[in-house]
Image (cartoon, rainbow, N blue to C red; front, side):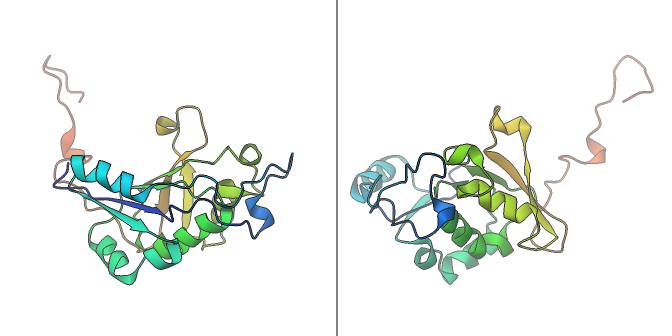
Length: 192
């Protein structure tokens, strides 16, 4: 798949930013993420990826600056098939989707890494708040996130992005998932 799929990773590598919203905090015991917590090692990750892959880009910085017009232009041509959200905060999750929303095709898988981590998936905080807002129509009545139980493995983390407007869509592969793909019985039955 290295000739057909490109991976894009986004991180500040500085750890968590300071929380600026109640939607980013723990409402039960007040156990909030601390500024700088979960800092990463950019150089170490780059070395690891360079030794194994040739189909990746690591974007260092905040989403508002790394989701550039140039990169978004690439995503118009090479539509995302999987968006893995590990933003932790509601505000960061919203920031990503505000940029990507016009480019996400119907059927794209969206995985929310911390969906249930903050307040047990409460619709008031974190990534779960974003999902609840989208499904209430905050981003238009033509888009929603639908839990995909076949991929979720008994969690609320894996969704399919669904749009019913004229936005981007995947082009079907000829002969796949179409009516001409019915398997015929070989025992003489008229049934497919």
